[in-house]
Amino acid sequence: MRFEILRLDDVDGTPVDSTVVDAASVNGIVQQAASIGQRIWIRPAATTAS
Image (cartoon, rainbow, N blue to C red; front, side, top):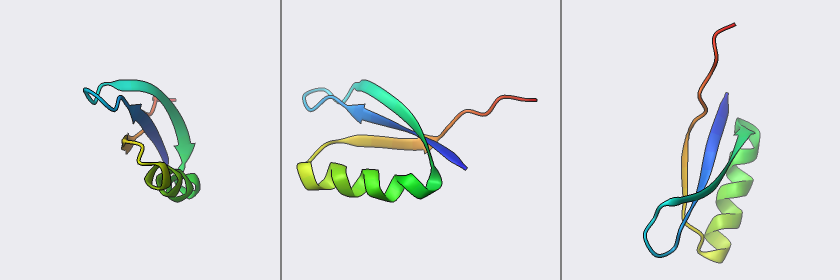
């Protein structure tokens, strides 16, 4: 499963940028964001029909 991780603005919480990662990478990104106090939003990545 893939997830979209959005980095949020510190002032108003609007998305600043995003990246799509696999499930195995989510924990590392969460740990890194927590260590620097960064606000993030994680949601399942949109899938496209084949």
